[in-house]
Image (cartoon, rainbow, N blue to C red; front, side):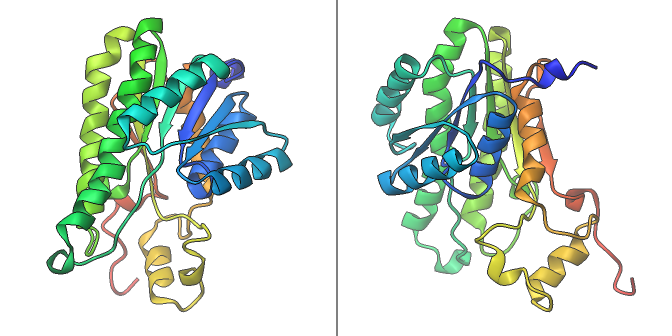
Length: 262
């Protein structure tokens, strides 16, 4: 198989919320595969800092400030990108939030905020980028789903509902836009070693021990572990793959876990 199947040279990829963490790792991976990357955030300072960080790795990133839940702002900025950078070939809907609040304590406003950012945001972004892809009869969309697209966990009801909805949005967009040569897929990360999880990734911490024992690979994911999946779903190699959620979780969803005496 030719490695050219995975070559993204000449492609432009928009990764929302890619100023840090898993989004930044995905954007870095796409850039290393040859793509020109575009990122966004709602904070100009965070955006500027991220662009400087990409530059340290010899990656030029274009940045735009807007809220993914504001359709007018999204539409205006997509038009600017298409004119200033070029046609968007790849969209990665990465921006999202989580609120860990028990159901009986969660305010409706918290519920609605999570669904708006994690589900309505990808809908708006896909719609506004997708209309250009439809005209060009070509495009790749990747939605950042979650293991919570498949299973539940206490205190994350809004997040799980949003990610379950995002899984089904992925499948429906794949169905509706396949005739336009647009492939829509999702990536479902497991538990990853990021700055946010650093405080609980220490030996002896109950949650760290739980993740290590629950994951067949017996480790946390490295952010770079997501790059291959993102490159695959962005490239020609996945031209007949659509409506699929690729879980990158070290095997968690494949197992019930270890027995108590193991």
